[in-house]
Length: 351
Image (cartoon, rainbow, N blue to C red; front, top):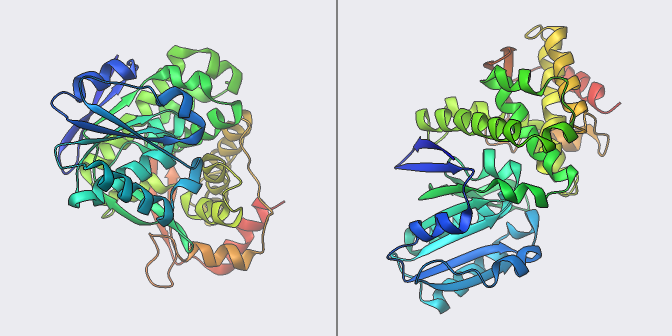
């Protein structure tokens, strides 16, 4: 077991490679009620979950991004009200990134903020969504446009959950690990080079190392810039185009798959602008391809994708902003790039 400490609006710990039920027992002491929020497909695993002496309430919601809606949030508020949840009670989100995003936002908005704990069950949830205090739901106009900064009391990472994932979901989560390697910890890229998805899944020590390194990257960034003033934006590497693809595909692609496509797009744009070398561009395609992640997208008209990108949180008015690299582990910003350059990068991705 290892622990990574995050300093945000308060200090909390990410516990890595622990048994989640035992960890919840110690965290839930002195709580009268605990709300477990989880996706429908986990109902059989969660419905009888008991931790300590607290009264348990079970709130299954829709799977994946379908859970992050105003309709679901209204249901959660009604459930919490009917159950009589007070500020001394606890919300626990168990599931992928969509579930922890939703559970955290429900906690942020109920009684102006009650305590919550994240138990991520996917690679993406462990290294990204559950860490950092960003919570939220989706709007019909874009992803995560409704949200709040509300850090959990603790993040509990039980690696046994990973055995329940399909290869597709495991690979999608690794996209966020790759991102951490490109923006900060180059050793992640070195560890991934030449490794197939199967080899990584079969090597628990390597998987644990990759997850811990990625959490440390995010933890360091979040601790220096909790509310995304500037530094934290680097965590959105690959996300500007990636989110546009995700919306355009109507969430039929995994978030990590969209981020992988987004990283190829920004790498192509950066290369065309002379910011990165051919070698770094090639590393993007090599690493993502060997993990079976998509590197192309031709699902929509360019103007539609451009419109989605204009709603990105990093945009300022009509000026698009992208996180880019100027070397492995080194980031910079691209502001207001020429639309011809953007289209050219898209043409490289859609072929």
